[in-house]
Length: 196
Length: 74
Image: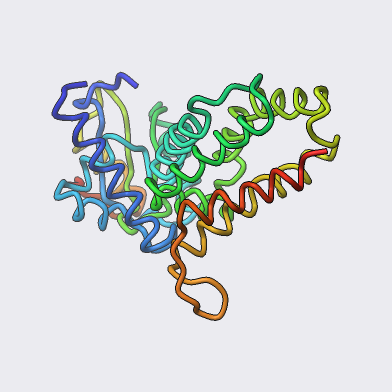
């Protein structure tokens, strides 16, 4: 593909994510996307077979990209504290730097695309995260709990803090900004809860 | 995905429902057109055909003669 076209594909992807988040999958149309990118509808249909194909391809690319960021510098053989800290860093960075992608992935989670797109997270994470948890259990660092229990305690608090942050408020409309101090204080509590 | 852009034919249609699509599917089959899709989720109901030999006019005639609207997508 020519360099010029790669830029165009990237623009289409960015605008598509913005519009999908803004309008939802139903409200999103190829026409609106073409207008936003200042290209013809026909050009879009050269890259993508149809709206479904576009949502799927972009969804899959984003999930692959985000899961790569989430696993950056993560070593499944590291100590439990170090490994979990790295995952918190990665996940926080991911959500702060890619709020729109994160929101689109959240939309995919509750859509008919769910099975086709979100399985990729499972495929990418199963190996390293499974090994990490297994290592931590074998070394006696954490209790042997069901994976779902582990995941919920390990990450749900982080996701909730980020949700408060993105919404700019916590419970009852109280203004909220997530600081490093709050983030790592919460991390310490999570660590305490999971450790033996 | 190495499709020659020249081989992608695009049309705005009113092939709206699954039923319409099935019907057009039969027509496509009869004319040995294999690589085709219709976007039922979008307002232009875009018919997309990949073929090195077909002409725009041929497709328009084929679809119009089947009772559907069909024009070149610009």
